[in-house]
Amino acid sequence: MTVAYERLHANLKALKLPTVESIVDSYLESTSAKGRSVIEVLDYLVDQEAKARQTSIAESRMRLARFPARKAIEDFDFEFQPSVDKTVVRELATLRFIHNAENVLLLGPAGVGKTHLAIALGLVAAKAGLSVYFSTVFDAMNRLKKAEQRGTFDIAMRSLVQPRLLILDEIGYLPMDREGAHLFFRVVSDRYEKGSMILTSNKTFAEWGEVLGDPVMASAVLDRLLHHSTVVHIKGESYRLRERRRMIGQRGGASLPVERKRVKGEGEK
Image (tube, rainbow, N blue to C red; front, side, top):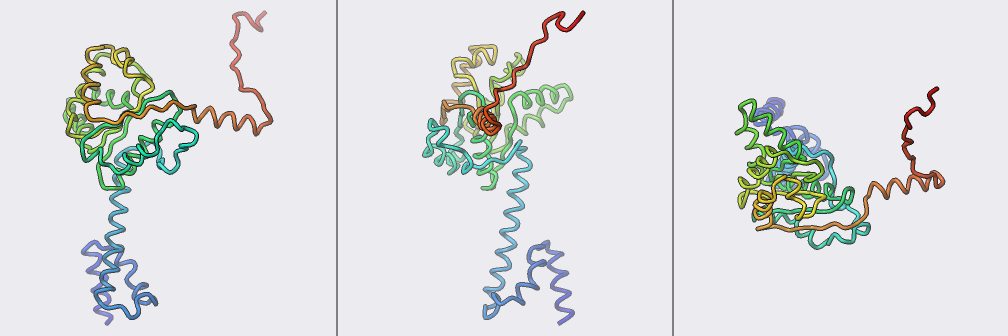
């Protein structure tokens, strides 16, 4: 028995079954294993290994996605943002839009939860085993520019084109130069009808010509993005402003701090 026991653990390690190797002793000694057939015992142990691997793979995909934070759909305050249709979000969470290579565009002013929803849908996709990549559009285009200078453009481009879901955040918060706009167009074109994108923007579609610095290019980009897409307009108030007001109320109604501009010569002799 000692030889068999040692061989069992050695083989489990060699076969890279760490979960089974770590629980087999305690499980076989537990009351839950008593009276079970060999098949039932093996089924339980292998099932635990499979679940552990799935969890590990999902965790790895979430790390590779480079989410700036982890936010769940359940944590989104739909009552505070009634313009967001729960039914639409639930449908998106089925991930059918990814399997159909469709896009999601989340539009609205700053602080209304666009990035929250984008990350939440990305997490659902990563947990389902799909490859996801998150970046602000500004950072993504800058990486492509630097890669072009280093001669590694194709590698950098693949990192944006290959994932099943690409999330580009904050379109319109910072203006794009001509090179950045051309690179953005190329990313959209290369993913068109091949891979899904989630994009967030504080600009209306009519303002994208100004964002990209070229109305014709903006029209071509939107033509591809909107061909197969779901557009979610969020017209609510900023979460951050709500939290700030709540904090002020807890402090007894103190007013918001106002930065006092220094007048030239003020305080000087």
